[in-house]
Length: 383
Ligand SMILES: [Zn+2]
Image 1 (spheres, rainbow, N blue to C red):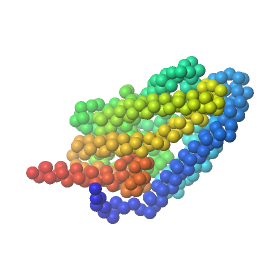
Image 2: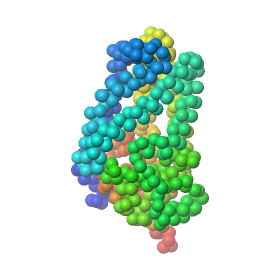
Image 3: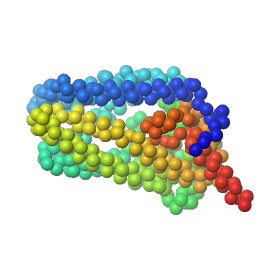
Image 4: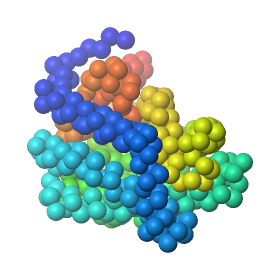
């Protein structure tokens, strides 16, 4: 497909630079994490940390496992904090962030604690199954893990997100009415629309469909609500409603379940291999946790292009749904342009960058699709 690029669609050097730095920051962070896991295993540091954890944990298995995890997370935070700070200062340098250092540091602390709590739940569950069912642990662990995942997806909008941001029900009557009309046309009901106070931390705009069942809701950043026309916000709402109508969250959970099952199978195979090679004495020796983490990291890395392609497919579907349900595509186009400018997004990333990194189609493609739809639609109405 040949893209007709108007000059306004070309990326500014600033946007290119910002996105390139962010990408390299992500890659560097990933590489350091990967090397850390390999070194932990190869240098025997993991076994040493396990022994320290046992001494501090009064030889109690579950407590020692928790202490081992805490030590591991503290060290990796120490290794990654430089990247985190660089990311924070990058947003400020490009005037995309309104967050103060204190607020950022507090978010880091909260993020670490949330990670510790969730991580502890996962590893305690994992090693419990390893001790109870050494042969079939991976199937049991997979079932428990998916259960936990679904509970967390439900709780996230009401428990996790509010740790970092404030939310309140949308009280704009005009928008609520537009949403009801959209929902009725879709033959569905949206349980809630919330104003997401993103402006306390960022100048970027965003919107999302989150939650499951009773907590399913559309969240709209105040940075979007306060600066976009009602028609533009309606276009964004229609896109989010498209995710809902096409059941994208549910489908993603099924995809996730299949990948996780394969991941647990691969983890089981790897652990047995490591025990056979006398790297560890038994499966339930939690010094092998970095090995499990490596299996998960390698799998996520290998599958990233495929998962991103699947996500882009879903996004195109949600876009098409939006085109069909709003009166004109122009507000969709102008909202995309505003978003790109506000978020300093790359409209035309290189092909391989889009293929590997992007969960959303390039904005230039989304705009082209909208324009094409608009042309066709106009043609039909003239006939
Ligand atoms: Zn979307």
